[in-house]
Image (cartoon, rainbow, N blue to C red):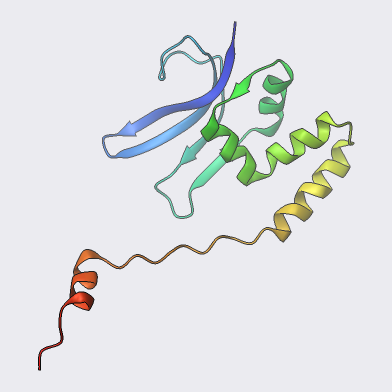
Length: 129
């Protein structure tokens, strides 16, 4: 059985909420999961992410593959770096220290300000004489 770590969509229309699950790759997106590993709420600012580190590492040890989105969530939490360090044979305490140092160095990306269509049209309009 090929296991994937991926998102299960929940919530109402236009109000998505996702659970991170371990699931057989042949199952449909919202099919029965083997285990729930956390959740992700993209509507909150900043996005709310809760991942169960030990459970995810246990599935990765068994050969589960994370989806691209789950991989990015793991990267933002520093779990991907920790997993790579553990694979290289670094002790858990040292890996945790290195991840904390890497997350402290990380500079949050500045969001590009986008003017509304109305403001852009106003700025582009000719100035009356």
